Length: 223
Image (cartoon, rainbow, N blue to C red; front, top):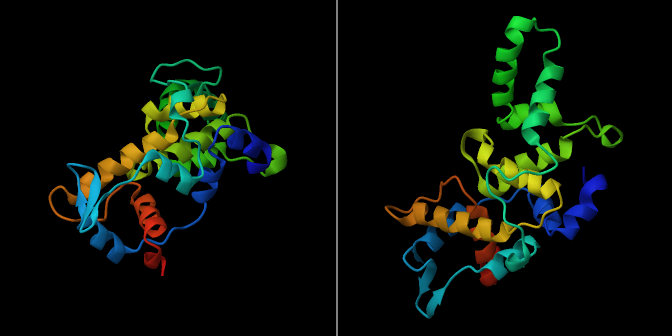
């Protein structure tokens, strides 16, 4: 995938972010617990003895290596039409998988399998190619759909959300999107959930990016 699309990913500022998500970031639970003790959701900052400090779009952009030019991006919303239609690709792939089904059961089976495509494992199984020489139709779009849901939005239960389909279609159609703002918004929401009642770092969200930010600003915490 990288061989065919790395130049495109670099052009639209997501190459380094995609590469980062291939690296396992070990969670430092003690560090997160300590840092969350200073987090204030009212101001979205850490309240320290010397003052407040908080994450910015430029911080996340620098850490992830992505574009921060959020004013120069396209607007994407559910129902936005692109040349690439993931839903149609899902139907096509479902037909390939169900060629041996009888006609009466075919429609129901297609709908069921189409729904299952939103599971991470099923999506990868039906869209992953057979090496660099056999890139399958829709594989890039399906990969971006999976990557955005799993590593940017951090959806629950290993499932992709249909409302994120237009984002994958936009990225595959060479539209520049404000992903850094999305990541920062998700991170702020995650930090609020982790501190609003009791401190609990075990959240479904991008807290690993918060840990990276802490280690960038406080060098001694990298040890």
